[in-house]
Image (cartoon, rainbow, N blue to C red; front, side, top):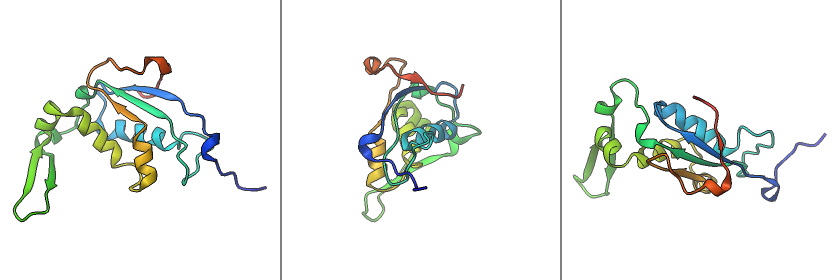
Length: 143
């Protein structure tokens, strides 16, 4: 018996919606990353994007457990000496919660062109409204 390998034109994509209200950030990110990669499907092939589209709503209500909201810090560096910038997660969650959720999910995807292709199927929205009603998204498991 030959090993099955999915072809890109054979993949049928579904749309899922996830409500991030009171869900821990890491657990939400792993669940969404699994669907974006396609690991929930029996036709999963590591070198082919077999994943589905995911819409995350209410991302400003995602929960950081413990004292992470005060202790966790996002760093970025321009490459110049002495130009390390620090932004606490409390400020990031107040100003850009979409960025926090999408970065947590991006960290769990492959770091190559395939991972960037998978990330294009992710949509993150601050409120409960989203413009993808025409795709008839199904609710993704969890809470």
